[in-house]
Length: 204
Image (cartoon, rainbow, N blue to C red; front, side, top):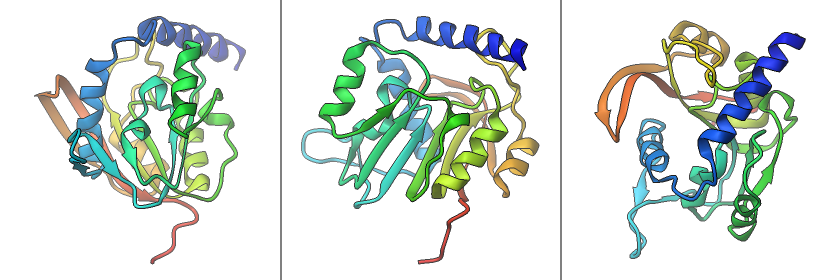
């Protein structure tokens, strides 16, 4: 486990360096809107921007949302929180605070959350130390989980796991969809996405 932890810490430094100052995140945010559409989040135009999500008072926990979580594009958000272990520039946390969004610098494996309407996981699990544990924590945390992940992608310095459809289905307790993206929103590769029941799911 110590060896894995050292590898994870190195991967986190890679991630921190990749984000840099976080001053120009347009490319990643463009991809996020594709992730959101696959997670069945619908945008609306508020008269100023067409890139908004109406959460209708629901609470959302974003695991691994990074410096530009989709929560920043949400309106009518009951409560929002981003949990991410990466050390971002101080102004990133100030931005979240100004938007009324909580930010906690913590690994997804270590969260002990409950009572959320939704948990979002997108483009995260390749970066974590134990993806199965992160999903277990997400299931405990919320009624539903919305997820988008890349599968069958080779491991690298910043990507510690090769995720598969079979493993994700097993961990989530359901069947997600897979699709090969060929340039939509600058995204390429095989992806997996879906909406899954959390441990506290109840029919409304």
